[in-house]
Image 1 (cartoon, one colour):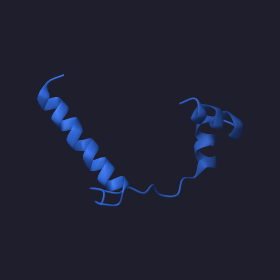
Image 2 (cartoon, helix red, strand yellow):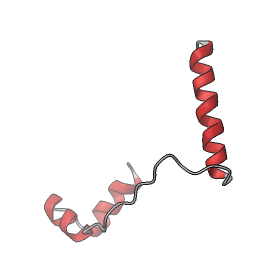
Image 3 (spheres, helix red, strand yellow):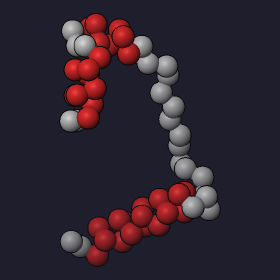
Image 4 (spheres, helix red, strand yellow):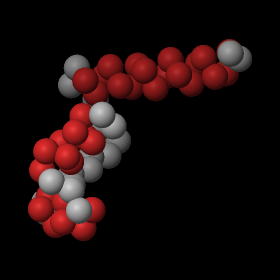
Length: 58
């Protein structure tokens, strides 16, 4: 690993720690819209238990 790559990773890690401890605000925040889970299951022809299996084993 080059020194430049290491420095970039260290900088991002310090930013993540600052956000996690409340010292800094995240650069952006994304909130998903309400998800129609039944429509997704119907589209993919999955039962509720089968979609849970896929989520857990993703």
